[in-house]
Image 1 (cartoon, rainbow, N blue to C red):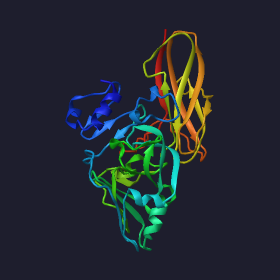
Image 2 (cartoon, rainbow, N blue to C red):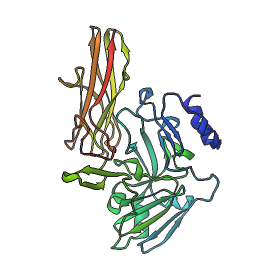
Image 3 (tube, rainbow, N blue to C red):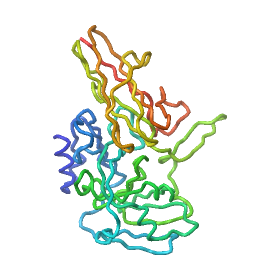
Image 4 (cartoon, rainbow, N blue to C red):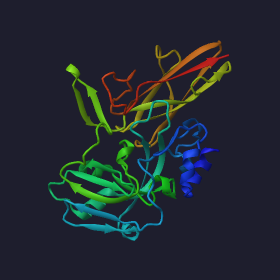
Length: 341
């Protein structure tokens, strides 16, 4: 069964079948549901909705229930917002990459979409947080909750209702979800039902979405994950591809939460020598597509490697930090080995 048929089946409510179905060329977990995008199949700038990656923390909430957003906590006003109430806010549209914090270097838990919705800053301002409010706690109808600094929510937060000119699908948070452009996906809570202002963040389960760094004397330091780390990947050719001699087109993607991608460099000798690639940049919160054309006239192994630099001066590290114990924010050089015959 193809992936689009699989996701359509889940969306239709045949949830129990999910434990027996697997989509072609994707890694899936049925409980919770995790579906990766096949980045090599991307033909345009935006990931089609049926191919957009899915990372759930629990089963989607039942369909057909009344949907409201309750806004409370350390605020001067308590709000109860239905779909019609959102019309008082200005509709916004932006393109943004959404990436799972645990996305591996060679995996597809990342997608780029054109989002529409309403500024969280306007909703927050209507509630008028009290001086002691430092965090916004978002709760989804699936039971998942996440805290975000109030300042960040005001600066970049969106209550997203549409993706790529279509209403959000059930598996992507219908009828609305939080979107935090430039930050990892765990902050973009789906099926939002409650917003609370608080002086402290929600308690975090041990190790969940935390940066954990080994310190001297076997101590560890824990802290919040930073913004989306600068990252580039090779989408074509794929790992272990067999290439014919002659012209080879290398394609890939790059993105960062710290601004526009300034350059992507690529290598065919495992990073010993580097070459500039051709960029097709987009808005700063979206990914950049890049390509590099080489000739492979001799048979043998070719070690393709790429690295990106963003406008803030951040460059991908060569290898994973051995002191990192958490497995999040993976962004070292992407390497693909191919054979020319």
